[in-house]
Length: 246
Image (cartoon, rainbow, N blue to C red; front, top):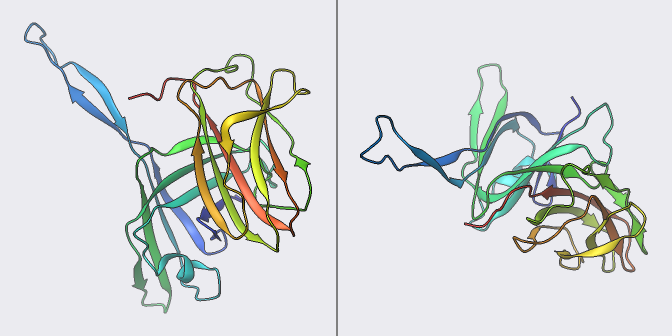
């Protein structure tokens, strides 16, 4: 209950009635040697897809506007899942960078008009992580330090890098900087190399990733800077606990 679905610069949470599937398949390579009596397999590249069904809505910034163009460029899709009735920093979610594969409609005998679509990963797999915003939030001008997430001593520090996903649904004016910082003690924070998004001047979405061997300390937070009007946005952070190198 209370989940959100974001597609690029669109919040489709009020139009999507079901996220039909969130898939993270992995390829398998057969490496069976002649001296084995059963198959041997190793894991190959990861993939991902998100399929969803919604309701026909031609209002501005709703499902028709989001899906009807069928872009050939990549788009970010994110599903955010609150732990309770309201979102909080640290709630879980998943994101992927991919291609929109469909914009299908079905007209029911009862007069309903439904929409189904799918986004399939391109260049990077579907990734699970934690929100650095309390769902979709409004952030004002100046330097704003977000609440931190604690990934625990068992998981951090880690030495395999991270990825982050940004959805900006609107910004009233000006330019906003968006970056991530980490800390070993939840007090002394420093910028994470590779974790600064492109400066924001309009609605946008972006995935960024660090080097595959970047050290990420235990606590991570979002920081916004700049002189700008109110910005409505959401950020998800995915820490890598194993090597992502191919």
